[in-house]
Image 1 (spheres, rainbow, N blue to C red):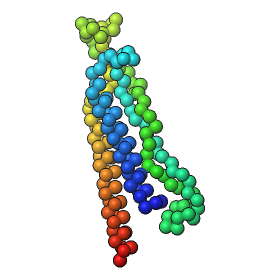
Image 2 (cartoon, one colour):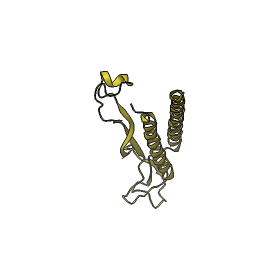
Image 3 (cartoon, rainbow, N blue to C red):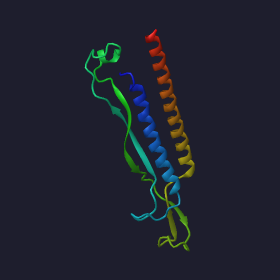
Length: 152
């Protein structure tokens, strides 16, 4: 593990959570959108994350990292967004036969977005973002302390 790998890992977490918050904000903004350019009500969007795998490290290449000596593929480089998918849960239906968006039975199809759930998800993404910022700050503080020890 290199000197700045922990910062790079946390930075990938920052990017991932920023994307999650952008998608959540888009969901909230479209909570009442009954017609999209593709037709039909807006569909809630979700971000799919996965662990990013780093390049395998040769055994014994880093004498200060005990993991590389016993497991050459132990390195990880954070998180990545695989993509944004649509939630396939059914639309919210509201009976309003006077609405121009109503179907033949008089129901208006509203997005499958629950603002309360989106706000809970936003709070979780915000806390994860804050945790990554704290991890970067602590990593930098440890790096600074290490440099001071090495200089003396």
